[in-house]
Length: 483
Image (cartoon, rainbow, N blue to C red; front, side, top):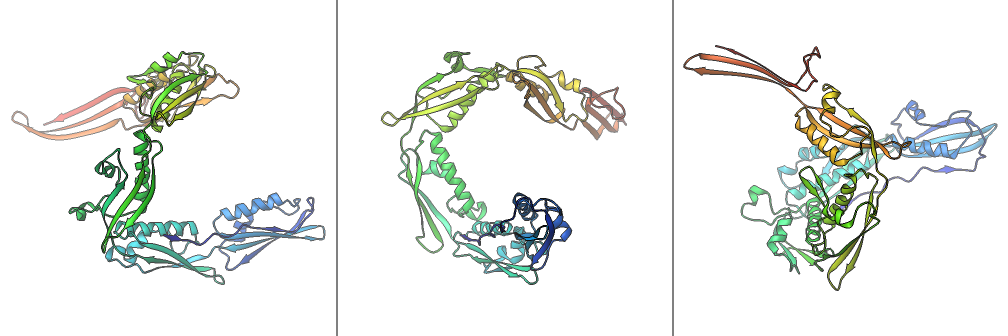
């Protein structure tokens, strides 16, 4: 459990001022010790002497000054003076952290102050940051939970000396009892066995090898992730209505814990009727058969009678969009309507397709090739300017470039051209890899006795590109043997 204090209130502006009043004077007023120079403050103020006063401008100034990280709060007040308005910025500076203390951090050497300090981000000499302190309390709590202190509580206190602009941060730890998980029980689980469900969790029960594996400990972050994984597991098996109704933590004896989860499994849904709307370019049968992307078939697989899963639905929607993109229809939008039939345990799917217009390649732009020549990359591309923007060919081009061994990574992006709605630019981004290798070795044979070898291999060689002779995509190998 974390008990955290709330942040400061928003800056305020007081008093009605005529819109056209010019700024006659700007005053900076500090509350407590100033932690930022006047020069830095004025650099973040939009209002200038002689400017017409604007509450929008002073609002922006409050926002800019708060974003510097030096101030707990910023107020702007103004008053009418002869010939215009005087604007006063009142700045409540954040204190500087002069000391960080830990109280109650018992539990052995693992939780010594020196070890906990390494786990937090707050440092002495820096301005106080409450979000950072919040993060630190989480980090300390996580360390205690890793050590088996499931009931640990971490709070913090800021002791603020406003006159000096200094603060001491105190982390207060209540470790509670050290406990081990004796059992995790899934109540009302019918579709799957206790063993199958426990395998979904990374949180494990205590067993005789726990001293080595570290199992049997309860960590809040891991537990939250486990609950999400359990829901995902059930939904991937068709139990869309699944939920964990209640979680009970029991302590049958000192230092031991039993966790009980009350499950509601619900129906296991299957796909009912699957229909398509708006598909004028291709028939329903063509879309169902899908398209071949390299050696990978892309087609809807969650059809009538299949187990319904949210993951499968997303993949099928992508497969339909991929089918259209394979023929150059890059603006295709696919929406799906789910119609559950609880009496039959099925979900009907209606795919609504907005096909859009066919797109063509305007230009192919290559980026990131600091050594390799453009022509070496272009000869691997299966798509050219003026052709239909076929995403299957784009995928093939990417695969070819990856297969050259010249690049650490290859990425392709589609760039829209506002003035040419049916044209797109293909951006091919590469990250150069290491293609040169130096090889050295020593050996012995009955014929040559001792011998030594040295070699150099370059997989991106270019004879006509001094001084490094790289970028042509050619292979070069030099080997010298002496003995």
